Image (cartoon, rainbow, N blue to C red; front, side):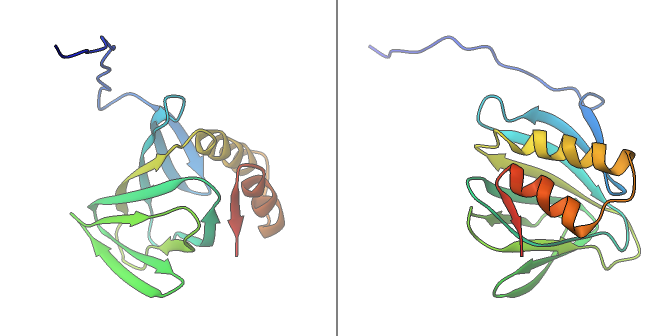
Length: 149
């Protein structure tokens, strides 16, 4: 006999989610990591960049929905266009930039993702309350297990 747990299944409507501004890039959080999975839609305008960094515990997946991102790794660069899926395990140095003339759209998945939503909320607050510096950004990220290189 199959032992099956009855669990609630959640459908997240396209127009729902917590909208954050991360230094000019919109992030719409769909799942905040409370259940062991962080899921967000992330837009990156032309010229937007995230420097090399590492996550202590989160494995990260980018699924490029539109546009092109240049993913940065310790081993080099990878141009990722629509349809590309990139897995970035915790501890692996990575970053990205949008070198194109159009906005890039990606689905961002982190697991276990328990602290990443709080980090993005803190970065949203930093964006809204003044001009963030490399030091202030690095300090916020480090508090949540993400370290800038």
